[in-house]
Length: 361
Image (cartoon, rainbow, N blue to C red; front, side, top):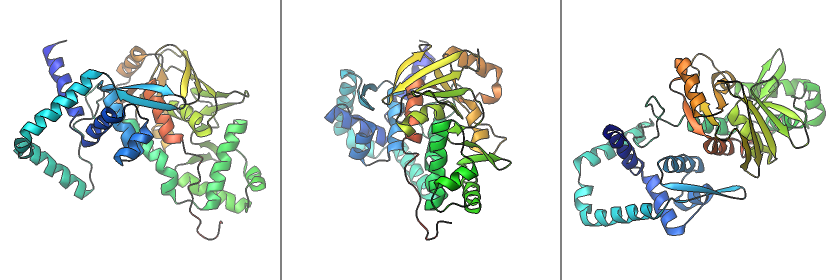
């Protein structure tokens, strides 16, 4: 490794240790051993999506390993070397605590962080992973948090949420969206007028899209063919809006699925079998996910979904990006990272989120 590369890697190494939440995760795992994200989140009293973000950083930087235990991913310190690093840091801090606490440079950064927090703006994260162009990372955390919270932020009525959930179940059952007539028949309190109003509210909340009054997509499903087909054990086939959506269908429904996706670089099929929250089979051996955001469109189905795809490997993704410089700021993820994104976004997507407002119409 070149000296400049080693210096940059060392800088990122210490940046990974510069965040309080990441340090708390490391010390917790040193004390208790392997834990899942939910247990870590509960123990350190931090939001689960935030913990997932920091766990990914610690894995990427080589501090943690992950093993599957049924549906859960269990994270542990990689080896004794990490324990030694934490112990040496603890010893040094105890010896030098007075000087460290009064360091002008660190104090200035702490004050800067406080000002950003008070202003409601987010300070750039010095310890964040980066894209290959050097820009801050992680895009999928921003996309995922927005998608996951969209239902809650929409303020749906109970009736509107009933319509949303019925649409998703019909997509999963038939591979197609229900008609307005079908919704009228199956959802309590529905009429043509109230169903159309509910669909309009769901579209305004960026939870589905329509064309000429017909539903064309309801996240994570698409009524039109895409690069991502999802095949259920019973044989029905649905289309997903993007690679993350295809993976998320497994966690949303808790069903075994096979994903068949086409690599944008070579148009070869990528096949994944998802079972019990894990990737049971994959072809080829090491596919990756690439994510980018277009800046010239509005709804998520147009801004993000066409640009979140699986590639046969990192080399295929790199070649494709080289030919599409407009997406140079996109990010490449391992399949395991993509799996966690799907779990985070869609794991509770069918859960009841509406708050009754009196009349359901």
